[in-house]
Length: 270
Image (cartoon, rainbow, N blue to C red; front, side):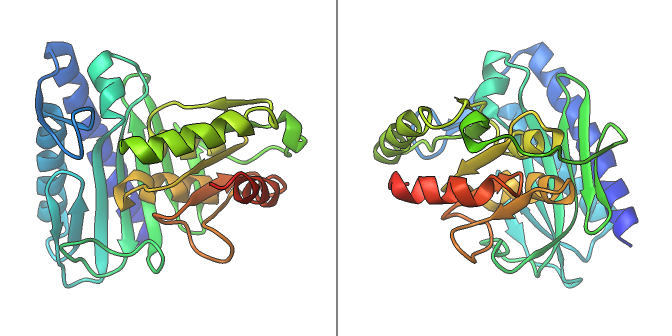
């Protein structure tokens, strides 16, 4: 069944990505804001999620659904689809080719407020960057791939030579604190990257484009698929201590680096 779920996630994500890319070429229209004026929603976000939701409902009507733009519906199958129709909407708006459609299916009952990342089991996921034609996929205990080529992590560099990715929330006070921590962390590692799409940051760990990634205050749709890709490529993906990755923290990276990065983030007051 997992392979069928993965095929469905990949097929729908590619189709939604093609739709979003078409809408980008036609011209992006901002239709709403959420938490504040810089937290935007485009017409393409809503149209892509509507397409994804419709395709999943047609193929698997008993499954639950939880999307960034349209919320959640309970299902009866015990599976829920976690969807971000365009992760990296600001990049999408500005024409930066670093945004993605993210679709994962997890073993957890659907709910209006979504399943809990602390308890779900991710079964399959796809993260598609249509702007550069990259398709990341992963299935539980079956590995991860980029455009069909298997992903496996290379050995970790020393912590001081590691390239670390992160992101910042929209809330001004929290963003200021996160920026202050990053400013201190950058002196302890090779460099920091802030690329603007959590799903692709996690896939970058899997692809070896960064050595580690951390962020807090993420929603389930931001990391459900990307975390599975990173984990199946051999990364450790976790929260603080023994916690699973979730809103408090998602930390992903090469196994030798993760304990040191977590220790450093605690020291810096993250």
